[in-house]
Amino acid sequence: MRTLELPSGQLIPVLGMGTWQMGENVKHRQSEIDALRHGLDLGLSLIDTAEMYGEGGAEEVISQAIASRWQHRTPPKSKRKSK
Image (cartoon, rainbow, N blue to C red; front, side, top):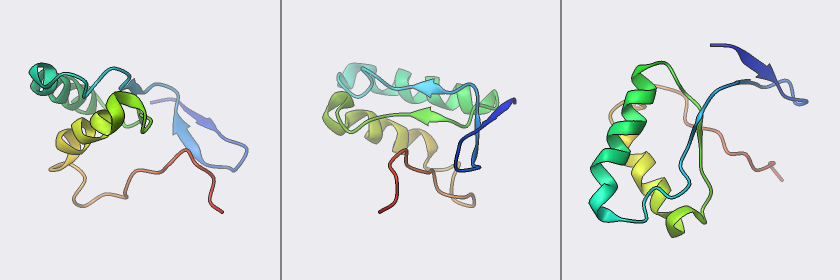
């Protein structure tokens, strides 16, 4: 996977998965989880989200999708700057 170097020196993948509109409808929950897991299976590791997506529902979908996969990895990083 190609990466991009941020001004901080951190490398991020140039391709990721967005979660806008995920977590808004419980009927779609499993297909959203499956879609994220499929992306992870294909080697994607960047998942973009925001607390406003589904009023936090997108982050719940992500947590369910990655729960069993991230037990022994570095935790995801936030886009927010550290204070």
